[in-house]
Length: 631
Ligand code: BES
Ligand code: ZN
Image (cartoon, rainbow, N blue to C red; front, side, top):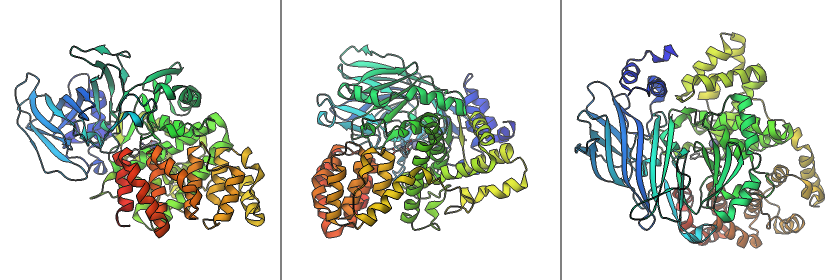
């Protein structure tokens, strides 16, 4: 991409990068010249000096809830640069030296509650700096689980969650998605534990450590955004699924996990035939304890998963299609900064449905698209309507925690945008462009303006009529949904939609419910009016056994309906659900729904939250704290 390399800063940095690392880093530096690549959620000044490689040597101290040891950072500095600025939050730093152990001057600036504090190191000519430090016991990226919070109940468990800007609470580096870094790690855990990370696992069985514990070593030789460095440790076993796929889980969960995930290898193959080779070697997954705050997290080579995706019938595996798709959109081509989160999630949601279609057919894929579309309409309403700036794809996150901007808009409006382009130019042409887009931007950051430049240069190619039809700028920069949107096919749910009407007319719960798949059941429950009343809810629950559902998505849909109706018999079920898992997508809306039910719901919310909160990850409790604050 010679044109993009023209910026002076990028030339300087590419030239100064240590030999052998020029290729992945050159593109990174180049993109910094795009005006919308600046990351307001990082203190780093990569045009002056940037981290190219991170080497961690850490011990996981479960008693103190700290990671402690060293981070050695390779630095590429521009000529004349005297210092490097890193991101940090709550780290206890003991010393900073050069590679020979000579002390370097360093200072931690004022802490901002959202983005943490700059850690500035005087380089004194060093191109490698070694930081000796500890993470704080309340580091937001890390959750230290007590044995009772695990399936086995015997050993504690640790996992990390880096996205969006949490990794600075345990790794002192430039924590910005546009600053790609290779990394390696040596992690010491207690003797009876296994550690896994989001890179090549070099020591599957671990190595004995003098003085106790076991060391596990890892390596990621492709430059990745630092939010993608992730760790888990505990009583972890492994089961292969296919030649390059497998699943890690606690022994008690492993069999159910492996059964649920049997199709993973096929998904990787389907993804490759759509948009090009899987470039990360292995695709493994780890099913974490239920406190994991997300459905899934696309950590390279090792997707992190909630156990609530195990339904027993593989009906929630679109989550795997989604996290796998991030191996292209997100991990290969990465949003340069969080205002363009849609470039990760919108592309991934589109790609997810293409994988689902390839494996399970158009009907199933269309059902997921239709459910996503409904949730987009709700999100737009919740954001204050289609004029709200929060309904833009490219966001203004000035003064905000990036987490606040991360709504369904990025996912579902982003995917609707790509479906609209696909429909306008035809699938074949769209797929050819998308595949080449992944190749052109592989291992590089992307921004809204670079995306627009790419699609104009390589898909629109000066066709004025097509340019007019696509409304590209309106999709990216304006609120609401542009007029050219291709709304999803509704035929996929025709039978369910008819059953909703029949139920409203007759009051008879549908006899066919038990024959429906999960998506059809969800469509039915979500379509019911919120004011049915307790009598009708009791009939529904008796006929459809909703409170007993082992499917987390169905239980969630039912609980929302029940709360809206102030249906008392559901409260113990709700309490059990909210105290047995910490997935934010379920937890936060349920507490919000309770809060909306004022004098009925608030006391229930407060009572359950007091009990549940200690078990939640900080991203979940942070959101619920906000919800319940004023009420
Ligand atoms: N990358 C996200 C998770 C994420 C988003 C973490 C924002 C931190 C900040 C992941 O790929 C994701 O989107 N997970 C979804 C599931 C998906 C099927 C919509 C989730 O966790 O619910
Ligand atoms: Zn995602």
